[in-house]
Length: 147
Image (tube, rainbow, N blue to C red):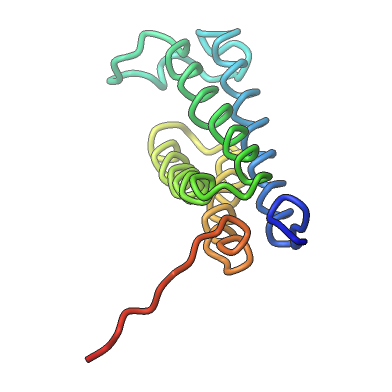
């Protein structure tokens, strides 16, 4: 018997790869900011935080590591199991990442990672919406009756 955990199509595998890339990238970025809270590891001066409530990158690094590192990896685990909650979580991660990178471009000067992770976020959101992924997670979209 084929179940979501025994048979995954290429779309589901691609989405899981994107969640892995995002999770590992988020953990690496968060760890770099926490390890160098004054921007020394990431080569980002603290002056980028001017006008923000943060005196250094410790809190943003922890948030990055948890929200864009741990969360995608937890979602990956759920996606591997075909859990319905992982479908919703994956879409939220994709949309959130696009928003995050858009705001980052407005605050921090251009960095090659911005368009890369914007694209990863966009692809996560798009792949999540594909029928194969919805089926994998047991998400059924019902058509409403038209009068």
